[in-house]
Length: 415
Image (cartoon, rainbow, N blue to C red; front, top):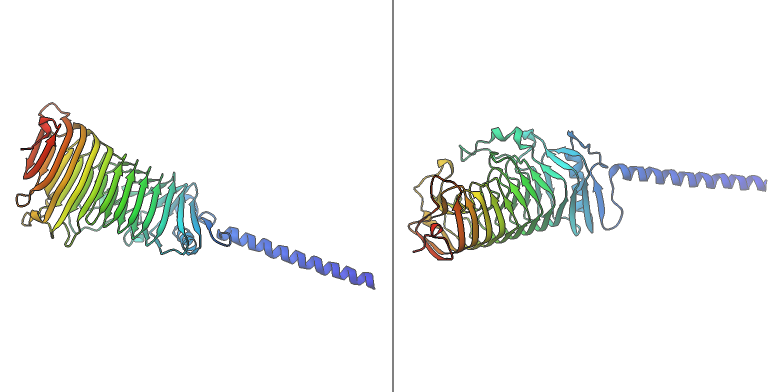
C-alpha cells in the first residue's frame, strides 16, 4: 500500500512538472510570435517577428505601428528593428512623448511607401513629440515617388494638393539620423519642424534631378540643427532653411543635382520668424542649378530678418548662380510684384573662400531691395569662373552694400 502511494505521488509530481513545462513553452512561443521584449527596462521589437512580410507587396503598416507602440510605451532604452527585406507601408504615425529613455530604429532593410495615395492623410513617416530618437542603419526609406510625381501640380498652382513627405520630425528634441538613405520621395525627403538638437550625419538623399518638389532636407522653426557629411542629389533644394530657424551647422555636404543650399523661401506666409546664426562650411556643389542662395518673395506678407549667415570653404563644380541673394523670388510667376520686398531684411552675410566654376556667366548675383538694401555683405577670397566660352564671368548686383577683399574683379560688385 505504501509503495502504491509513493508511485501515485511520483505520477502526480511528474504531471505537475509536465504541465509547468508545457505552460512555459506555450508562453515562450507566444512571446516569440508577438515579438515581445524582455521584461524590465529596455527591449527590442523586430517587425518580422510581429508578422511583417519582407516581400515589398504586403502592407506592414500594422506591424510597424505595433512595434512603435510597444517601444514608446516601454521603459529604458527601446529598439525597433527593420530587418533585411522590403517592407511596404502606408502612413506611419509615431507619436510621443515616450515613457522610456529613447527609441532607436535600426533600419537594416528597406521601408517602401505605398503608391495608394488614399492611405496618406498628409505625410508618410511622421514622428511627433519624441525625445532622444535615433534612426540608424544602412537601409532605405524609399518613397517610390516616380509612380506619382505626375500628380504634382505645385509648379502651376499655389494651392496644389501636397503629396506625402517621406520623413517628418515635428516637435522632436535630441534626434540623430545616421547612415541611412532616403530616396525617391513623393515630395520632401525630410522635413524638420519645431525641433531642437537634430543631427543628420552620413545620410544619402537621392532622387532624379527633374523630380518635382523633392527637397532633400527642409527645416523650419527649429534650432541647433547639424547636417554633417551627407550627400544630397534631388529635384529641388538640397537643403532649405525656412523661417524661424537658428543655430544651424552644415558641414561636409555634397549637393547635386538640385537647386542648391538655400535659405528660404522667406516671406510667403504671414508672421514668419527671423532666420539667424547659419553656418555652411566645407561643402561641394556639383551641377546644381543654384549654389548658395538666399531667397525671399517680392510680395512678402510680413517683416522678418535673415542675418548672421556664414559661407566658408565652398567648392563649386559647374553650378549655376553660385552666389545668389534674390529678394524678388517668384517661382513660376505665381506671385505678384505688388508686395513690399523691403519687409525681408538680409544683413551680415559672409562669403569666404568660395571657389570653382559656374555654369552661368553670373557667378555672383546680389539682387536686393531698393527700399532696404542688403547690408553687411562681406566677400573674401571668392574666385569663381564661368565654365562656358560664349560669355565672360560677371557679378550682377543691385542695392547691395558689399565689402570685398581678395576677390577676383569679375566676382565683385563692391563700390
